[in-house]
Image (cartoon, rainbow, N blue to C red; front, top):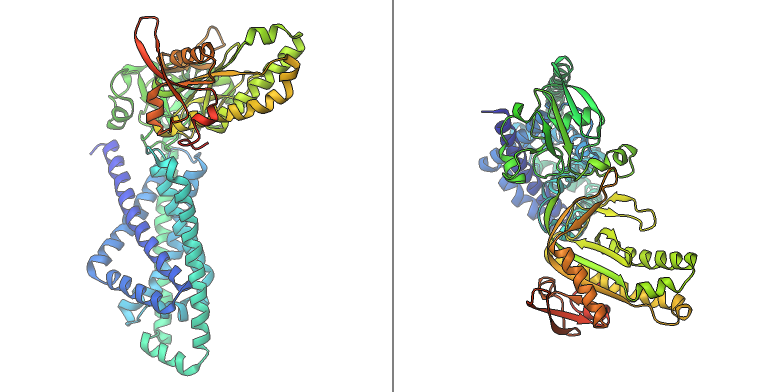
Length: 581
């Protein structure tokens, strides 16, 4: 089996075993939360769970999942070429290593005590015998296990379509479950502590649950040390493998790796291109942590393509087969000199090295289905030319700041500022977003709208916000200009071509294509017919927008074709019923 196939198999094993353990942990915590309501019900649910975990099928499933998950976590950690990683990866690895340190003693005191000494490790035994002596360890175990599982689930699902829309709700549930579980355990433990204060009841509990004798306690202590010692030896082996991996990379043959408009490195063979970037502090985006599940680390091979192996299955799935020079940096292991162009901006827009590397990013261009949004100031020339230069510039900046705020608030990505307004797109996660119309700088920001429906709703919400903000702008400037300030907006759904376009060193990230042209055309149409917003019907239907307050019309394109359009004189009315505004 090739290394790549083995890695993919390992990822699948890690995922499946993690999901099994997460499901079991969720069931345990939910049953613990019942302690807030009834100790008896809590015990009944725990007894049902014990009947499964004590059965051979349940024992095999849980033990296999535990062993596979721990071993795969240590294996992937030992195969790393660098300890530089994202905070999420670090938290996942650290919590995964710490969990067995707390879980193994707990398993010895419960499951092994049941097998070796006949202890009935039900909820009453755990609350009466184990909780008073190990409550801090139990709380830490709950937090670590649940936190590790939630981080893993998040990193697995975060690239899935629609996950962003449900993530806030899932986060609330993920936070509520351990809090409720801890509260339930504490409440139940207090009740049990009061009952155990009566000697007769305490004796009945000890007899019914077969508390371990002094000799059994000593044996269990030895088993705990043995379990921790075995796990410690496993950690030492993993650390040794990691050190050997680092040493092999250190003494491996060196090759030249050149980043277009970036550094030129002497890099060791044996590491992936993404690992080479991280090892040498070269900014390189990697959303999925180098697992081949996204295109953030994609590069274009300028020189040295012939020395690289064919595309992996992960690359074919993410990149398609159109341009063979486009590769995923996490999937290629250079063995000869290589020159590459990074195609995606890094997440840390504030890093000075990112600013220096910015001209080379996104030069390849990408095609996306987006919601295009055009905003123009009606009567722009007459308004500006009637004022002194400083007044005109001040007013334009106030107007553009207003438009910018509405678009950014609704997770739009501003593509460019025109002489009379702005062009923006909605509906992509990986679009750099123009930050300030005054400075013209570009920052990388994540647009939160991932589905067509969400993108359309966000665009209509931005239009409504601009309409509302226009009232405040008119309060300040309409008397000065002697007429109300009006805008014309166009909204379309279609194809746009995104990339850095320009000459020389100035190549701002922008968008062109049919959707952009359509949005600009619709804004001109709205201005010519004295409306505030003109939107293509497809955007209305895709977003589930109630167009009852909008007027249906048609117009003829320059080629003679007739097109339908919805228009309104107040964008806030056209988006009220169906949008999130």
